[in-house]
Image (cartoon, one colour):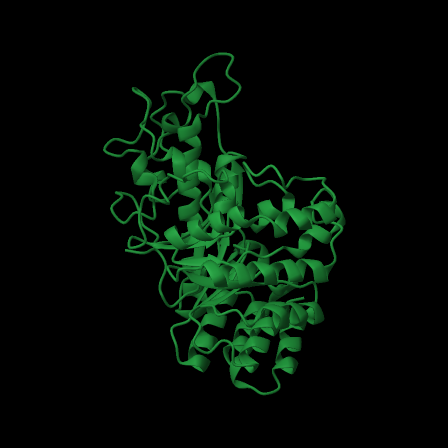
Length: 422
């Protein structure tokens, strides 16, 4: 059973390559682990695991080595077991950090980077083939505009112009259009720093035949709810949402956005008379558990805005907990089966860390469950009488979103929403 209702916008945990590969490895002999379970039960997108199931995930081709086979718990499952949305690696392309692709690298001259990218036939073919082989939906290959920001001065594309990056993206779309085999449904990525720039990007890419759109940068979360709605309403006004079945917003995972996206999904379904899906993703629970070794806790969902945020506490590591039978005190499908001794396993007096790789996998699994549970709870509170209080500022936003695709003067409504949400 999936953890999230089909009536709600769906969260896509952005499964990283470490988690996807490590869960296939055997547990070392005598390594503590909850009785009756093994690492494969942490593959939450596999409906056959013994813990819990969520059948929508995101995974990026940019996490892998160019040209090499990708074998992990994502690729071995097959398309029928869950919905896989594939990212085309825009982050790694923008940073010049595509593993195994040496011609493109950080710090190189932008004119040279443009030439390299234009000639990168085999690389683009590898990306498209991976996405078409494994993914149900896939992002088109966009050239992200954030490479132009000062903090990204080492990007190989930093000194390009917006027009150059747009032209390269259009070239990528033509490549996909020529080489796709129609085994995946493509989501056309939309970029832009402001409304005028988003419209210019849109006009350049909207010809591409796709199944939906992915909102990135300021057309998405970075631009706030006003920009997300302005972008979608522009598409709707031009008739480009009719017949589409997916809208994805990149890089966001908060309860506030979860209920906003559900409100948008409900409004679109009503207007389009379709089952269009809205989704959103992040790698936050993986970073918290895998990199920073923090345990996520559920929001309390009271009237104050601060109570609608996740907790992130440093997970206890101590040599006194090695071998401990004391229960892990944080509730989740996995957490209720864990002890501190399942996490703290490195008992040497000089070990700075008591965690091993399996400890991180366990913590990540708990964190992802916490995120999904929080989004389900938030939506139940906002739309189905769940136990909690939606902050009054957001109630007004939800109310305005509910009818926004039905009005002619939608810009007036969008401006009101922008004022309400700051």
